[in-house]
Length: 226
Ligand code: PRP
Ligand code: ZN
Ligand code: MG
Image 1 (tube, rainbow, N blue to C red):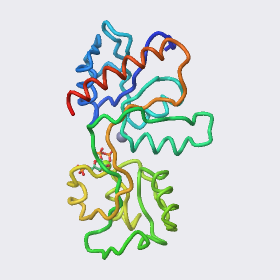
Image 2: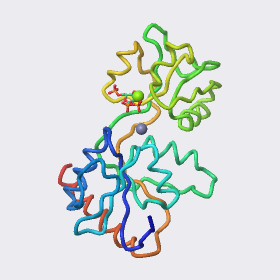
Image 3: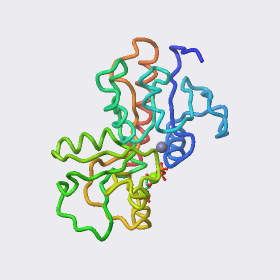
Image 4: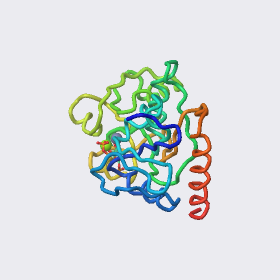
């Protein structure tokens, strides 16, 4: 796909917790698309200069960093994890433009229910399973804790049962997953929600005006809902 400078390309989650609220937000902001069929991964703006790209949420920050997409609607947790990963590379410079007040959750440490918890230093010399190795690594460094990070893409809660880890660091929303796995939340590393993400440098073409209009419309919807 070529990159026309007179259209704004927005990446969002194809299916998952953020996709319906994200679609509704765009709709309320007055953006319509030629296909609302979720199997269609590129949705051309209908009467507006904004196009949608439907992808895995984890891929959104990278697509923005590589200028494949201009904007993204993504969890702060995913954005910050990727921003840390890209630190010091040619693709650094991801930023959060605006919190969107949906998809609230937290990135937390959790340990087995039966375990006594005195504080983060209990994790010294332990193994922690997570899908957020960068955010966890930064936290451990700040706390001065020497723990081993066990990176897993998903189903992190099972790692303790499998003998792969002593604790986990994962997203908690309702808390049902922790309860189902006999775990208790002990420390919150990050409060997260869906955010608008982009790069921290202007486009330097027609997209700057499109972005200003996009932000004004989203902001308008947010103010009505607040
Ligand atoms: C997330 C997260 C937890 C669960 C927390 O997983 O990784 O497993 O949701 O939600 P709860 O507190 O409401 O139970 P998700 O369903 O997104 O699947 P994934 O881990 O495979 O990405
Ligand atoms: Zn994901
Ligand atoms: Mg999970």
